[in-house]
View (tube, rainbow, N blue to C red):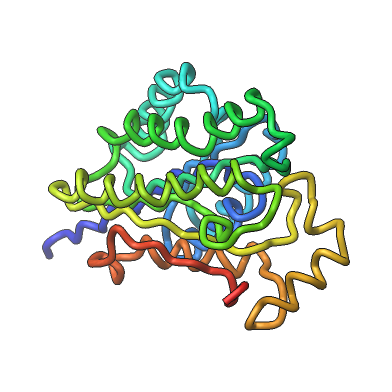
Length: 258
């Protein structure tokens, strides 16, 4: 009888996936049969827990350290990814990249310092640009890239000007990536979540019942999001069913401030 060759598993690399939205994304991908490279900034213990949760679903995963704001470390990170692909999957490319890692800044324009702006620029724009550039040779033709933006790129909330401006830049860059990577069949889209009460930004929304109440009042679906409202949506966007979707901004905010 002829032998049957099983299809190679898809592999995703999701930055900042040891917690929050990134964690939800890799777990949703595991449910869809996708393996993952989990990245973390400093909390290896949490990253290992995510890896264990993925393996519990019968998928393969590893954790790699990444400072998404330090472009000088990217060559070493890309080498680590290349080695991990070979050692764990016997491959030299992966299929999906989700640029999710980030931090918050809450400061009025009059109070924002140059150092604060530079820090947000490095992780939310410069880091995404150059990490994608460095990883591009390792992304399979026909692959998928999703960049994470924010609902704040559409609506104006005082104190979020720098963060929101960088996310708006990411949305523009996404369209250019879609155009330039299109000849390789790589789709590039951007997902803009609304408010999520996680530990992001020091748990600012999570720790403020008053802020939560105000946000719920301006959200059409009448509640705040959880990471699992967003992660599965990102995972679905990477699916082959969405192979003809590219250069699009998709907001997942429950109808916030419409």
